[in-house]
Image 1: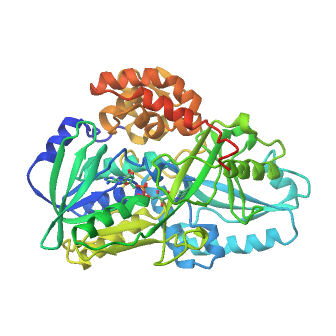
Image 2: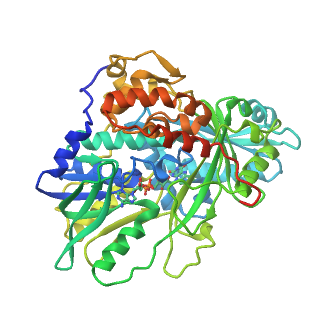
Length: 535
Ligand SMILES: Cc1cc2nc3c(=O)[nH]c(=O)nc-3n(C[C@H](O)[C@H](O)[C@H](O)COP(=O)(O)OP(=O)(O)OC[C@H]3O[C@@H](n4cnc5c(N)ncnc54)[C@H](O)[C@@H]3O)c2cc1C
């Protein structure tokens, strides 16, 4: 079971490496799915890589997704077959390389009109065909009784049958951490809580950056042959800094759109299947997905003009989600049943001059831009395709003469930290309650730490908090309860009740203030219902 010892992530050691005078091949700004994917691919090719994340790994959009590894049934309807085929291939890659953090899941689309099952069924057969050898199982047509058996508590009135198909699901924040830790294993230096504040230019070219350890305020100037801006919805800030240094104004490329998720108990959709409503009252898709022992309902797609770190839901979005759930579930959840509400910002890419109000039309594919100074910016895309995006980014860096050419494809079969070294077949289901299984092959190391088996809540023992501090870059209570464990996302009140004990273990491990008060305020926000005025 035990593999190589986990690499320690002691802050003082990481900062000491950051201070070493040297020139990096690649500096990546942003530690979400996109930046971490780029850092890992580059490090695995033998390049020297540093990655700076201003807050915590995946604390931006990458911990707030619907957690689906999917080709995108919606993009199929739009006829974007190449995007779907690529994502289906990448879905298989994640399931293979991180089987402890990703699993396949059956989705059922119920049909209430005669045409729905044949219409969606034919589309999903095409989905199976596009997946080819990466297929996870065949789409099947279900009769009325089979549909009700698959989705107990589905609204039976008017139900005719359904279609079942396969996709994947994952733990997005823990996958991000696995990418970070695998990149570190490949030699990269990664720091969270370290913000890039400026770019360095010489003779009109980007030659490095300036970053700041947020807790001490200590600044560091780093030299790099290539700088990749992977800051998600925030890419325009760095692009504008790059332009300003050249006396140029830079037009924004991101049109953010927010997506809300609501979490309730599994009893509202018991069983092993997710529910997909392909066409809600306003034409959007609605998912009810079993995830880590709870049920996730979502999402919305609401344009925003600002970029808050912690976006909050509008009342209308929550009414929409609970209202649609009530149309499809016999016993529907109400506000009193909600355990957590979380919101993420999509970095949709705006073609020049496009009106930000219609986010449905904006590109969901990723975009890579190389500025006149050589700053490489990547944004958009999906979690599922992070690896393909990384290959694309590195190809562009080579094309622009910023990085030396190295063979691509190295990450295709690269097992992530925690993955069993041999192909043991399908891993555990991510719809199950959290537990030791999320640590994969590192379970033995975890169980050797003090506090193993001293459970704070189902799926979180004291050893996991120590493991997070020692090996998973955790600095604050939020890092532990929002992203190493997903308790904030699953049950914010329970997370708040454990926070003081987590804080004292963390303080003991790191010698730092773990910001208990900040976490308690955040947990309140994940439970707060917006007022009528926030419609
Ligand atoms: C509601 C919603 C649901 C989604 N569901 C799915 C899904 O089910 N499946 C799927 O495949 N995709 C899904 N996506 C898409 C997916 O989540 C995103 O494409 C992906 O997470 C984007 O990652 P990123 O790294 O580009 O951005 P982010 O995760 O936001 O990362 C950018 C990082 O840059 C950091 N940063 C910003 N400025 C600086 C700076 N100056 N210095 C250092 N760091 C900085 C930020 O702190 C942040 O961590 C969903 C998106 C949303 C919004």
